[in-house]
Image 1 (spheres, helix red, strand yellow):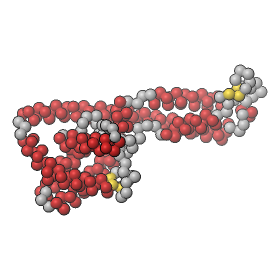
Image 2 (cartoon, helix red, strand yellow; image 1 turned 90 degrees about the vertical axis):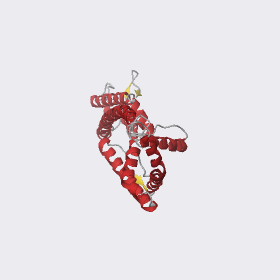
Image 3 (cartoon, helix red, strand yellow; image 1 turned 180 degrees about the horizontal axis):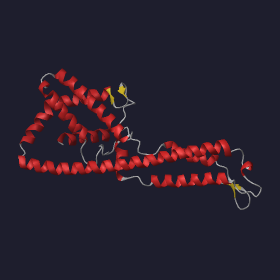
Image 4 (tube, one colour; image 1 turned 30 degrees about the vertical axis):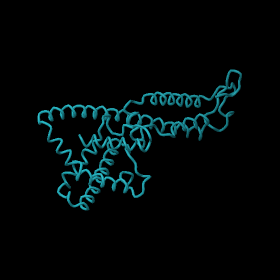
Length: 267
């Protein structure tokens, strides 16, 4: 938990330098990044015996941290169907999960941690009475698990919303195709002698309006967790496809116009 907190501090500092503002850069809402805590424990247990051999310690650190980041990114994407971070813009990356630059930096960070930071942390932890330490850890983990449950529930809500939006997008494409292929042959051909709009066109227009209303309703339902994650992970695809709004505009332009009371053509 200590290293998860220190990792969170490192991420917040990096984001502040990069973007000039505070960003709660973490999967969870609290001030901790579990991947750092897990990563340091793995590196420490596996490589502490090599702490006096700097080259082996560095190579091992790069290999372990890169593997952890690669596996974590892959598993998160498979579980949540979301790409949580993306190094695709960096040179020598592996499917955006890891890249050479940050792997080398993680090696340096682990080198400093194993040789300097961890011995100090270990001494400080040893000063805490066992009973007090257990109480503190129980309180911390109760908050941690609660945070984890709330975040996962929020992500599942986001997934459900995105599935509905994807369904709307697919139906909009079908309506657009039908309109383009069968109905948009000229405004005159879609009106009968009395000037009333063709019934089939009216049904398509009505369905398109229903989908638009559903779209607006879903867009207004963005949760607190969703807003937080969108800020923390800009690469995360929480928002609906950008093409969806464009589909509405294209369909609106494609649908035939209907006559107003004076017999003029209006939207």
